[in-house]
Amino acid sequence: MTIGDILAVIAAVVATAGAWGALVLMIGLLCPERTERARAAIAAQPGRCFGRGVGVLVAVGFVAIVIGQSGVGPVKILAGALWGVLALMAALGGAAIAQMAGERIGDVGSHMAPFAQRTRAVALFVGAGLTPIVGWFVVTPAAALIGIGAAWSALRAPARMPEVVAPAPALGEIGLGEMGR
Image 1 (cartoon, rainbow, N blue to C red):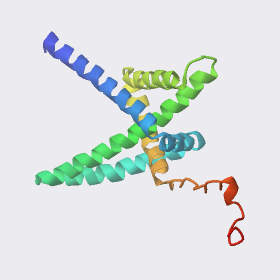
Image 2 (cartoon, rainbow, N blue to C red):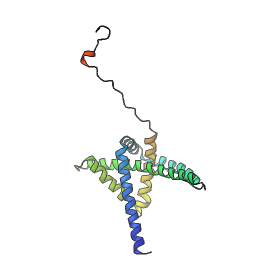
Image 3 (cartoon, rainbow, N blue to C red):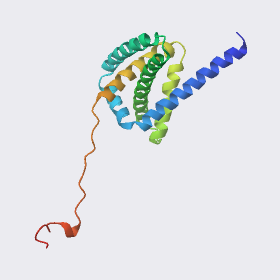
Image 4 (spheres, one colour):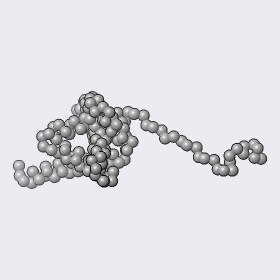
């Protein structure tokens, strides 16, 4: 192993961490309602989210592994898509965790804009996952499983339909009906 190999691995880890942080931040910004539902699920029952995450990972992972063992190329693409769905669910849950951390950053007295709080929380979240040994083998798997379980809860919840409010009638339209003729 040469110094070039070591630098390539370090660059790959830094690039992956940056991309993951950007994905988590983007999902939180693009899907605020789902992120809020996932945050509420984590806040209410983190243990249940962890258990759901394990169940979803085992079920979807098993199907992805079985499908991935197929010799047919397009079927292998389906297995990759299943792994991608799990990654997106983990990113949605990670966005919920970062939202919680961002709110707590604001609670400790820092006077930052909400976007700055969330960005700082995502950086802390990704940095905690990069911590040697504990981050790699405890923080990242636990956060991923809790996130997948919270995303499952958020995605299964029925979407609230916006209330349609009838426009207010103009002043001359009130009560005219047949008598106005």
